[in-house]
Length: 475
Image (cartoon, rainbow, N blue to C red; front, side):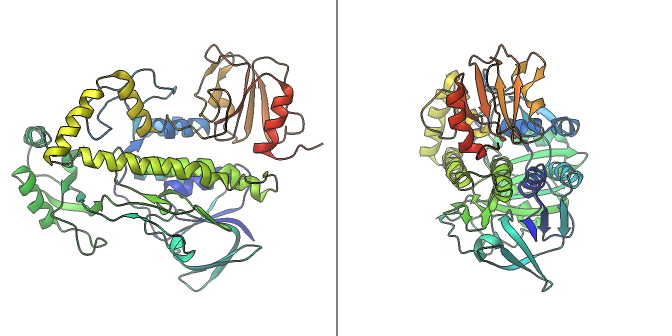
């Protein structure tokens, strides 16, 4: 029997596969499409996702193909400078097209021994006490201990298990495509500068040469939003918005997206779980979608691996929903707010001017950007040290950097005292004695996802926290 079937081979599913394989879990990824998509939906990784890649030793690969940015404008396209003093050693945006991100994660998943089957559409599933039976479009079946639906906003898995997806339908639609442009860049820049003074849902960005990513408001909401727009529809809307169609032609890919916000009522139904867009959808404002899904996978992977390995303490797998559902709910809220702030209505424009004034305060600017980049995420682990529940940043140690010690996906006790012990958990938790001028607490216990599970110096306190996250001690 397969341990985990991951339905969906996008960034979320591939990241999850990588995390599971670090713990020896037998993973099969089922992807409906026969070939990877070549079009660019997401444009980059925010700081928290960059941290994820650094924690698993993948960041150098991504840096080879990406470009670092420290520019503002991520919150509702309000043009403010990149904030100082963000709580991350990787406080930048990495510009990298989604197809490249998928390619790099696909390569890593294969290196770790993941089985990836393309052209495999799931049509049915049923579960019992021992596992899940998955039915495929070719009338074959697969059997696994768990299934995770990472199959997008129209998730087949979510529908098959009957999990409700409440929220608001699309009210505002935007066209997105890749096509060639027939006018010089100088003209594009001049028109964009003028139009974007009021219309923030418009823009043309070059991929190099004559191919551009084009975004423009649609004329209402399409009756069937699964049907892509035509090039003529793009031209019409460009003329209506910008007074010119820029001579667009030879489209590579045309699409539409809305401002619907929906979230699965629960992320787990027995042996079936949901992650990424299968669990939540929202407008793309702030570029949070891909990042949110990757971070879902990073939270879930080690927990599901522990459950399969028989090491999970009670409630660990359910903590995935408890921790990630509120994070996605906050993203839905901030994208709703951003869409209102990007409206051309007089009231919305007045509120936008007020928010822009507030963002001149450095604390406000940093708070909103840390919300967009997920640096501000803190899980509720109860009362304790101010670090409790936060992701530990990549601090400099005497013998290297912290994230260099986390590539294997294990727990970590960073001990500046040299007096503590993880005896009984050494098969799951690494004990590193080292010091950092950036860390003003004697020791921290990190979960495999880098969040601080305990901070202090008392051995008995430590022994009270280890079982909560890593299960019973081994004698």
